[in-house]
Length: 222
Image 1: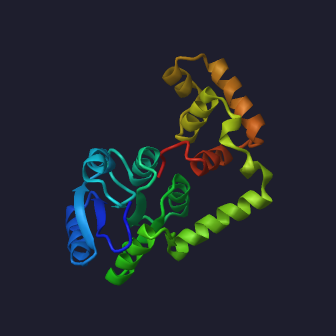
Image 2 (image 1 turned 60 degrees about the horizontal axis):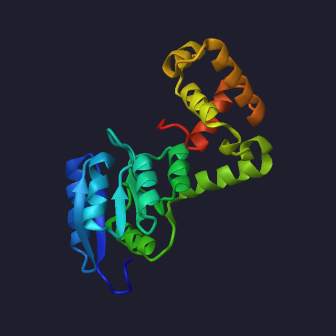
Image 3 (image 1 turned 135 degrees about the vertical axis):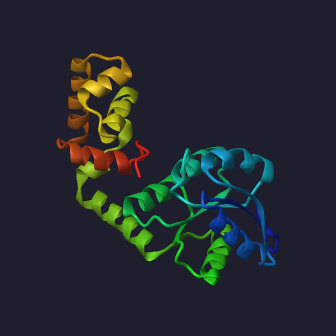
């Protein structure tokens, strides 16, 4: 864990090499920071987490093979002491919310200044949350929705493992027949699962099921 006055160890993850190199130059120029590694996506970043022991991961959210959300979830399950700061082009509120729910400590758009980025890294390593207005708005909206909409508060763990699997596939746009073929089930069984999901969540429109699956992190949709 980074102690007071210690040099902050940073792992950069971004599929745009020129942007990654620019951020590295900015952070390495700080007397209390050092970039210990960099990767073009989450898949290549994972082994570096163990070998470089970063205090913080600064990551893009939109990347091939393994995006920032998946990376955050996997890293924090294994190394809960590591901080995660998203530095991204992605300002979609659903993506902001999902990353925060996954445990990220900060969310910044790439429109920030050098001073804002440097301050955010220090703040996050110091134990604070750093969210730009768009991120705060997304979190607040989700909180208010859960307060005023009982269905939104229904937990995903009310579903069985198979029902969560079916819900994920529904959210990704698969038909009942598609799901039956993917899971080696009969179409009737899939229809039964679908009905049970709707009854348990009290959600009866596909659009509501999709929103719920995204909100609960059951799908990797961006």
